[in-house]
Image 1: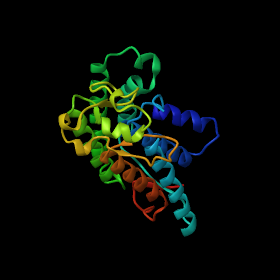
Image 2 (image 1 turned 180 degrees about the vertical axis):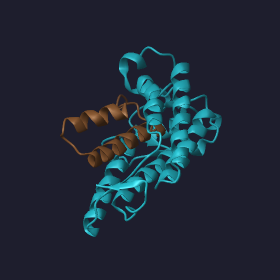
Image 3 (image 1 turned 90 degrees about the vertical axis):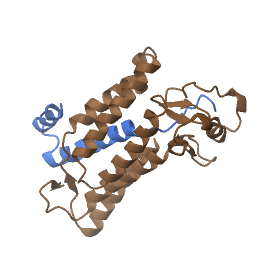
Image 4 (image 1 turned 60 degrees about the vertical axis):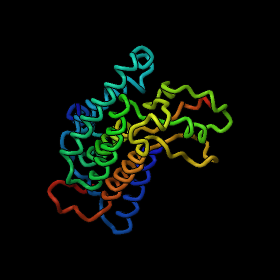
Length: 47
Length: 196
């Protein structure tokens, strides 16, 4: 999936490989913290 | 939300750090990033995707949470030499430990909920009930294993968004900040980084 996204973006000529690396790092870290963290909220229903 | 703030703050700090030093960003090459995608998928279905979230049982959701976090822990181990990963792994490990010891859910006490929502009657919190669509279950402190690792910290009352978080969450936020802060550092000569 990473390679597919990567190649599609590069082929589109919109971003270079280095920018893609930064984008992929941010996406990976974002998904990681969402999965690793466990903050508790009822989504505002109690307020 | 609070964990994403750490990512944003670290990125901003990393950009500023690199700009001041006149450097380009140094992006580390992470191993096995597919583990994060695969590992997050069960949680996305169980907690973030309403059509599935509203249909699956609590047992399946909690099993998905634990198995997901085990995969994320494996990802951390494979990247343990990267900046901030010691904190990402420690925080995740603490969260996984307290979740695994308390039936597959992150415990949160009625007392913590009362601090989050002071206007709500104290007896309105039902022990054993899930807290909204979150990973939390309401448990009495006396019945909670390793209660000091549970969601027990809250944001100040003036904050427009109320959320409880654990010690593990705090350490994960530190790790996320350290990793993104390191992008502005001076380790560009290493083989596993590339300057942007």
